[in-house]
Amino acid sequence: MIAVAIGNGESRAGVNLNKFKKDHVLVGCNALHRDIVVDHLVCCDRRMIEESLSSNNTYNTEIYVRNDWLNFYSKQDSRIKQVPQLPYEGNTKADMPIHWGSGPYAVLVAATLSVDTVMLLGFDLYSKDQNFNNVYKDTKHYKSKESSPVDHSFWEYQIAKVFENFPNKNFVILNDNEWILPTSWNRPNVVMKVLATKNLTSV
Image 1 (cartoon, rainbow, N blue to C red):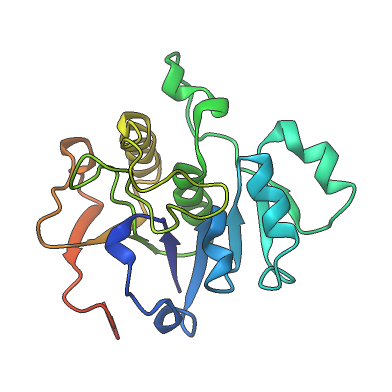
Image 2 (cartoon, one colour):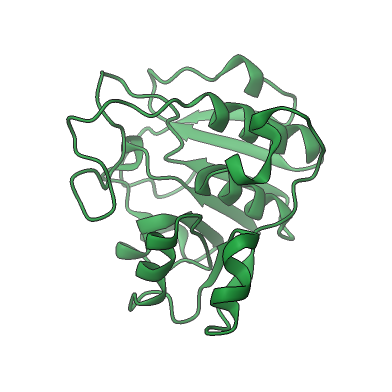
């Protein structure tokens, strides 16, 4: 079994996500439920938690939230789960759970599942231009397309920590040909594959 962690970077625009549903466990974040039913969904922001709980696509989805929201929402809804504890200890700001976002947590959730391989789709990290990179820009709860890109340094660092702490898992990064793998992601258990077609019948 393979898990697919699906981010909301624009490299996944046009990818037929339903191609993954048959033989993969799907782990997404935030507004992904608008487009597809996933097995696991990570929502760190309260607005996204509430949107996901009211979605027609999350009846059987496990929705992961930070500890500070757990007691409030878990009493109302059995779908609510706590995000996993970080698999390491660190003393920088990026190592604090409160500074882990939905994307890195989605990769962590996927890594904790009983799978050998985790694919990452839509984890662009950085923008190709000077604008916000997200397939849901200009929609509810998201920034406008003219907004500045989000600093991706924490995302890069935190996802690298997942790779480091799950050395027996294989991680496959799916992205466009021009996307550059961060140096910190260059590990023996990490490979990159180019999105040769947006239909993506197999990888």
